[in-house]
Amino acid sequence: MKIAFIGYGNMSKALVSGILASDKTILSDDLYIFHNKNVDEYNLERCTFIKSGEKCSKAFDIIFLCVKPNDLESAISDNPDIFSDNQIIISILAGVEIKSIKNLVKKNVLVVRAMPNLCAIFNESITGLCMQNSIESDKKDYIENIFKSIGHVRKIKEEEMHSFTALYGSGPAYVMYFAESLINCEEFDSITKEEKSLLILQLLNSTSKMLLAADDIKKLRAQVTSKGGTTEAAIKILDENSFFETIEEAIKNARKKSFDLSK
Image (tube, rainbow, N blue to C red):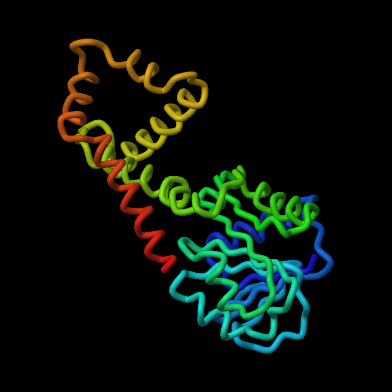
């Protein structure tokens, strides 16, 4: 397979690393990476960096679109020569539908939508993957293996992509925000701010291991919430301030934003 990337942000870098490290994604040429910044500063084995907009005579089997939704139209119009009929276009853009990508490319292409998350940089992404039925099964397997190289993959319908983006695509930021809130609580003479932050992160790490081993998260939480104890007192305040409803409303707002981006 000959593969090109348009855009070289964090997610693109994670995918490039995953492809190069995997023994299931065989390449027949360098990875070609089109980027709108100074490409001379990049030097990565088996990768050729090209300034976005420069002519390229290569024919690619797969092109990844890894730019911001607002930059998609210019990214495609700057590099019209690299698109051709029967290519597979893989988009990781939030909210941009398959039909919109086809209209912009103006070629008879096959489009895959993928929604990885930031955990891809540690090969722990959760990726939602939507592939057109007309894509050949061996190519579907190849694409799935690319995303498996950066974490976990779930095949979903395109109409589910807004919800997947809101919950899993943006999910790491929600956990980070919660971590921030815990870090800002309480002060200690015996524990520095840096130590407190590390202890909170260890708390989240240890708790996630407990959750992965649990059969029922709600039951586990009830077991560690003693009647009349300190934990119950804290949970009571969260309940009184509609913690669950606030989280649900936040996810709904993220889903709405994804839907708005598709218009």
